[in-house]
Amino acid sequence: MKKELNLTTWNRKDHFNFFKQFEEPFFGVTVDVDVTVAYKKAKEQNVSFFLYYLHKSIVAANSVEAFRYRINDDKVYIYDFINPSPTINRPDNTFGFSYISYAEDFNDFLKIATKEIERVRNTTGLNPATSGENVIHYSSIPWIKFTSLSHARSFTFPDSCPKISFGKMTETNGKKIMPMSVHVHHALMDGYEVGLYIKKFQDLLNQ
Image (cartoon, rainbow, N blue to C red):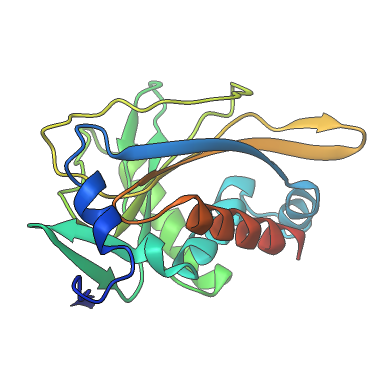
């Protein structure tokens, strides 16, 4: 479900009207997150570390309203919830896009995600999302400890979905650290909202 945001009373209406005109309206940041506790808990539960932190990320994103905004025909809609759409690697070293239904409970999410991953790995093609869908585009690059990241983009495609990527986990002074990049549409949010998401995500990883 979604509802239209009243642009006339929105305190960011000027920002929206300004940045929506840009050929490249996305901005991004790269940060390191501490996954020491999360990695330990995933191993204790014998579950996929990727799915464990992916779930923490989508829960954090859903808690920040701006991450649930999408642009469609110059209107902004607020979705009740958003779903993760991560790239899934295949045995032949290609990948496919997946669409995992959101579940606040991790065990429910794990069942849904496991089934979807199996489907993607046993099919071919990409099946990309359409404009304005209630998804976040996720990718994992576990081979690279990146310090910055850019995305391939078609500027003619009306995309307003956030893009979150995770890199190679390394250990420093007994702590497991993982780089993460967050790219978002500047017409929909600013650095403040990205900061809220990163803090919430780190808090959930530490639980």
